[in-house]
Image (cartoon, rainbow, N blue to C red; front, side, top):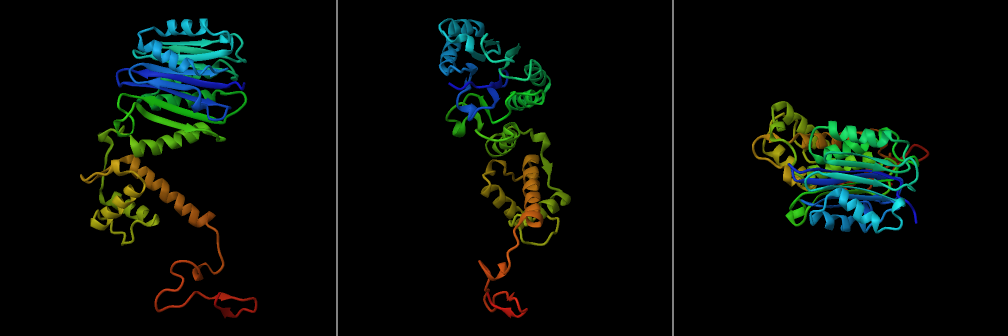
Length: 332
């Protein structure tokens, strides 16, 4: 059976009511095996020669009130392959523990602190989990930001000796899921990618913008004439706005902006108070920039393109001509 050469962090923020796991591995779809969590109960990461039963069994023990160290003893004592296992866990209050079997492939080990446990195997060295722990403790913000920072720090210190392939971020909170129907507040997986952590961070930005409500209202940007002009320009590049660049937040501009939000599933970021979320402004600028790059550097040049497709023969006009080898114009 393949081993999950992996580094992960399990952590809790009981004050915010958040528990989660971030993990990266040179293994396909690591998110399908390693992370387990339940709101108000705890989080578990099972890896190396992963025993997936550790996930639900550890959560059941935590739910019954067992301390993390007791959970480690209970699960490993009944497992004949315990020396090839590695797992970490954190409970509802932030107590944590980790276990690294003696037969896990080197370097293998863990770093445990209040509210978190970092663990990994087949790593470049102990600096990986130490770097993860430092980043988690020193990074401001809520749990997902701190988990992603910890994961990136582990990779900067060398990460998995075999390289990168997949990553996952799971954060639970009570009624945090879609439609408040479950506790899966954030559940993102990068199953196969050359830079899975960076891809996970990119996906999180879009997920955050689409589904979460994490931004501080104090960061809202007033739609001044300068911002209105920027919005008109970017919306025009993306095909949502076709009017003049007046730098005025008028009805056509507001309608174009609403259409942009709706077509990109950003309805939750709509406002009617003359302000805009900075994440929306960033996303609009980023998409407009990509479109400008596509048009100027990567869009294919097709001979006679104007003679084909929509608008090729408008009412009262004729198709665009193309030139044959003798230099004479002829219809395509």
